[in-house]
Image 1 (tube, rainbow, N blue to C red):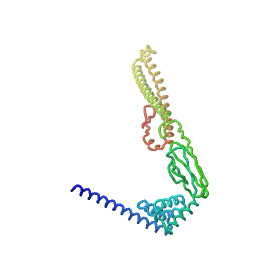
Image 2 (cartoon, rainbow, N blue to C red; image 1 turned 90 degrees about the vertical axis):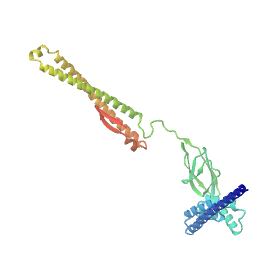
Image 3 (cartoon, rainbow, N blue to C red; image 1 turned 180 degrees about the horizontal axis):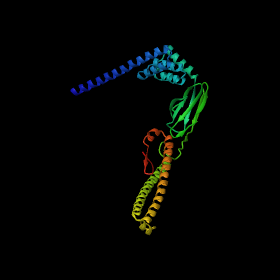
Image 4 (cartoon, helix red, strand yellow; image 1 turned 90 degrees about the horizontal axis):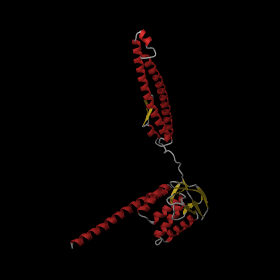
Length: 317
């Protein structure tokens, strides 16, 4: 018995809770409705639309829908005005009577003469359809668009496809259709935007190789210079008779050999250093060009550092 009582209490509480929620929504809808009326009196129809839409969303009434339709009409949004008045008839048609019913029917007939139907067909689903820069839905549309008379511009957008803008001129009670066929957007293969290209990495590799060779040649040149100085000291320590007797041999020959090595390594070091500098400068120019093509130019460029290396320049990230 106690279990049945508990269930009954729960059901009563649930009904009471639902009634409380419905009451809150109705009260909120009334506030928005009254605010919409005040805005209509000042002819601020844009703001009035927002209030009436909120009122209808919380608790739809025939008066709120009728006022919303009139605001749409005042803003020349005849398609929405006609849809709203038809929604009113669908929801409250059985209870409409007297002068109010006549006003609704007259409103519908009047607005029907102010709109035309436009059927928009798109070859792919999910495309965004806009009329006069205002989105009206995604393809495929369930029904023709109800638009004000005059000229309109229709655009279709879908990632990966290109659609051409179409213009149409609508007359009273007109029925027209537009078809859109997208062209796949072909992206050219190549480097990613904002990233170093293969040409840059080639220059960077050339900088490293030339810098290493330059360092090796400078080291060998230094060894040759030490050998030359050592041989020269030995030659200076010899007496004139010993120098005369060993001309072309001994320390003298060592000086000639180390001197030749010095010249050879010095030439290699200079060429390698110049090459490293050219590669480094070229890489920096290519890198800046690559980064300018991307959105992350500033961020990536901040990571680029140029520093001296033996006989050249280095680039690090």
